[in-house]
Image (cartoon, rainbow, N blue to C red; front, side):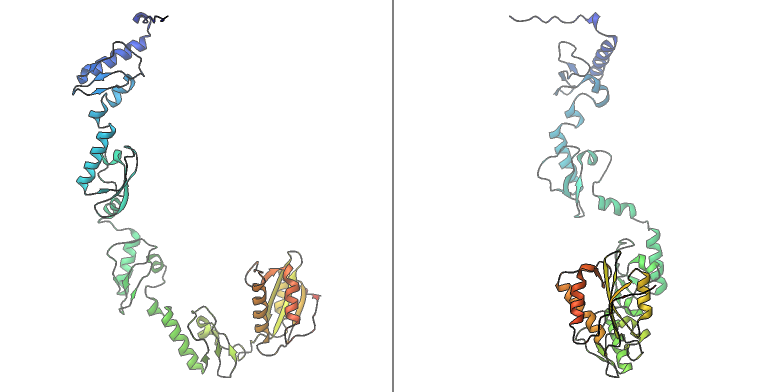
Length: 372
């Protein structure tokens, strides 16, 4: 048995519903459209309509006043939108890389006319934005306009007689190709130049080749011989034999200030120590010179009050060699420093003391407290 559905009398509808229907019909008449529905379905229900051009569509009354009635005429139809999007890309000279349509709000990968890989959004490209490439947009915004950093950088180059070789500004933290007043091609960072670090490392002597040449000149001046087969860098100690025949390891950056041989200056390390901080369970090993009292007192103030080994008056070169041997053994054992390069977990103490006590030259152990 089929149930008969009786149409609700118009008189029983709310005034609001009646006003919505009247407004919808008026909007259709205004746009030259024809309502195909035999009855009112509600303000939020799609109604079959034929637009003025003849397209069949189903607008909702509550949207008709705001977004229109025909998606195809308004360019919101997916197929129409995609066709318009592709046409606009072709007009701009861009190439679409996206293999499928992602919708009017989807970001579509493409190559802009300048060859940048970027993303275009159909809604944006077909709307208020004329171009979707961020790189090109940034270039247009910066065209004819210099930032304060660029202006200061260019002024500084001019002041130093240098020439900027970069065709465009790359940012204050990015190296820029520059030719200094002496013809060296270098790549200073504008931010570093503004901090007073200069533009040419060759001219100020901090370039690797310049530093090496200066170190070799200093060794020749002091009558010393470089034992390293290759340059290790200005901050790395280099094996050297001084004019007195002592083997030493000066650091090139300090050679002109402190000299090259500690023994010749009376600073040779001839003592080795092993300390622990019982509160933190950390072990400290190291070398010093003379009686070592000041060095141990300084460590005691840092909590390293227990002295497990303190070997003094060691023969030339033994203390540094012993320290290197202990550090190498710890590395092979998988023990890593907990701070700096000479602080280790106290669990490594037995290994350290075993290495020290069996080293070819040692002295009786001494375990005592040192006051700070």
